[in-house]
Amino acid sequence: MAPLRAGAAPMAAAAATVVLAAILVALFGCCAAAASAAAATDVITAAAELDRIDRLPGQPPVNFSMYSGYVTVDAAAGRALFYWLMVASGVPAGSAPLVLWLNGGPGCSSLGYGAMEELGAFRVNPDGATLSLNPYAWNNVANVLFLDSPAGVGYSYTNTTDDLYAAGDNKTGNFGLANVLTSDDLVSSISILEKFLVLHLFAGVSCYRIFSNKAHDSYAFLINWLERFPQYKHRDFYITGESYGGHYVPQLSWLVYQNNKGIKNPTLNFKGFMVGNAVIDDYHDYMGTFEYWWTHGLISDETYAKLWEDCKNDVSENPSEECQKIYEVAEAEQGNIDLYSIYTPTCKKTSLQKRRLIRGRMPWLPRGYDPCTELYITKYCNLPEVQDAFHANVTGIPYAWVGCSDPIYEYWKDSPRSMLPIYRELISAGLRIWVFSGDTDSVVPLTATRYSIDALSLPTITKWYPWYYDEEVGGWCQVYEGLTLVTVRGAGHEVPLHRPPQGLKLFEHFLRGEPMPKPVESVQSF
Image (cartoon, rainbow, N blue to C red; front, side, top):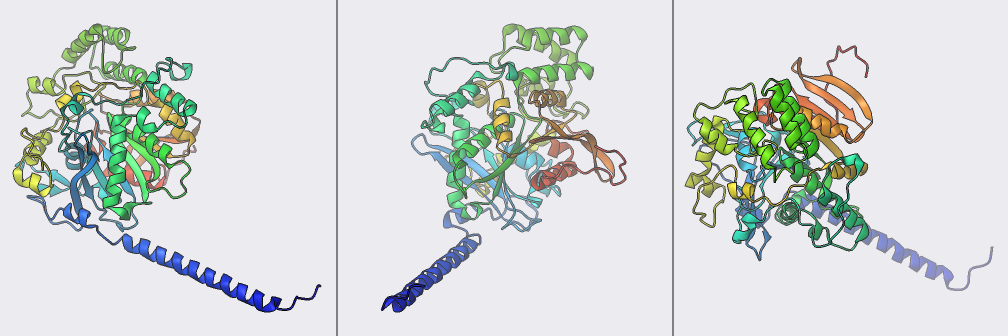
């Protein structure tokens, strides 16, 4: 071994000292950063504190915190979205996942339906002034964030009137791509396919320009909201919803996924999505809906054949005159029943004329359930003291709060015919995807959902089996490669409303990524 040069040993010792010091500094920095991050989870920002709900009018005592208010998504247009956060109560809130809930419509309020009628912590009593606790609230196991979107829905607002008449799923930009159809997707959305082509052909183009303005606003909301609530940054994050949320949820999921690409520790730590009784694909939705009506004795043989003949190739937001006419015939044959839950009684306070006004649109663009509870919620949300407690209606909107916005619905500019291309990409990405369906809904029925999922041609991991709740069949489940389908027995369009305990059990299993439970004594092999 060559001898050391004179002075080499002291130099080596000095270098070692420098390296050791650098390591100590790095370790100290990491520890300090970790401590700072840990402390951040306990810190409530001043902006968040302003949104804290001390107590809602008529509210019973609770052991969890709530926040609500506005987040600006477009300052130039004066667009702000309203949210309501219910912090986790049955599990440690500091480690529980963050779950976003989106109702559909398009144009229906997540506060009015999801939060107050389905999976939120409270139900509005018949007096329209007091609340009772929902023991099966989803914030028992997660931090649940309800969002009224787009602007003009619920308490969300815009200072630009044109926003109310220009909402829609897609703003693809002026790329002039040729219309392309694939046999795999049958009549799938051209606009969706164009988006994917744009992403592959024009990699430098911002996805904001080529994707849903609704999804864009919701994404902007999430990013800005996390600055107000930094304790939820990097937390496991899921997106959930129902009905026309079957468009909102996968579109927003895709946008989050695209923006997370190449980021090791994304602010939105997106894990997957779940949708219920969801509008997925027009062609298969029509097929399954008409079949459900016929097989459940809601329409005649002749009407079933005519519906299929006149409506199967229609675009949902612009049905043909022939399709509208035969739909009116089908509606007359169905009579005064609740199409969102065909075996439950209708609200006696809701006349047939009013029901038709509420539901006077094509059935595959559902508006939401119409029981008497909707009347109580409407009364409650219009109370000035309730709006004050919610920090809502800060602009002094001169018209009443409604569960669903007619202008948003009536002027919805476009609705892609299929979400299947998005499903394919997100399944390939390895995200957790669950689809659930109440089996007494005739608006977006189980048959429609099954046809849409079948079109994905996914390999089966676990064959169809009954799952159990409290020793009774809660529904049925099938696990595919990349997707889990769960049905809820006896539930209508809004599963958490009609089957609250089963809905919570479903949500718990989704968060854990575990298929629904089989009976212990089951001798079946799958």
